Image 1 (tube, helix red, strand yellow):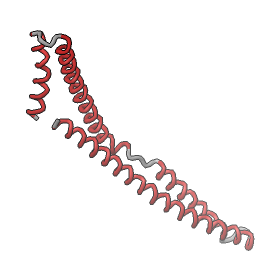
Image 2 (cartoon, rainbow, N blue to C red; image 1 turned 90 degrees about the vertical axis):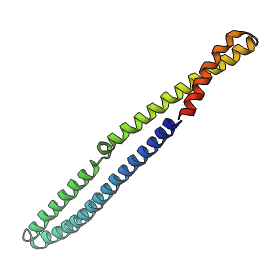
Image 3 (cartoon, rainbow, N blue to C red; image 1 turned 180 degrees about the vertical axis):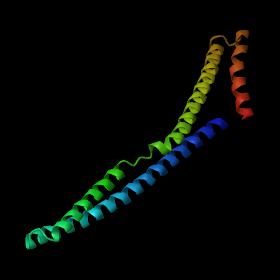
Image 4 (tube, rainbow, N blue to C red; image 1 turned 90 degrees about the horizontal axis):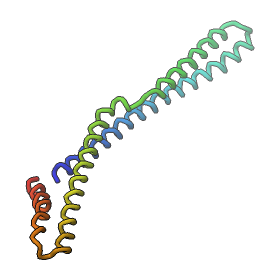
Length: 153
């Protein structure tokens, strides 16, 4: 029973750690996307100013403003690309392995418990079929084994 509680505890802690890492990545993505939007906003303002000045003075200082605004857009695009590539999967891989091991351990414990219960049920059925027979003594072995396992834990 102690192994089962440890396995359940490991599964719960693993899931919590994976959720925390995913939320941290979402926070980073949100910050980078907000910065990208800010830079894009500045770029739009610069393009608008550059377009106005380009038409007003015909290829003077506005050309510099246009170039700066294009660089702003390139920067915004780069930030958005970086933000979209953020992933928590690499960081949570070890935690996922621990969770999977705990789940496997739980599965094995439940299979053993199922086999023990089946053995006891078969023994009870044997008593029903031959209530006074001496062949039923062997059916107590799985029951005693299961009880000893529980008492040892």
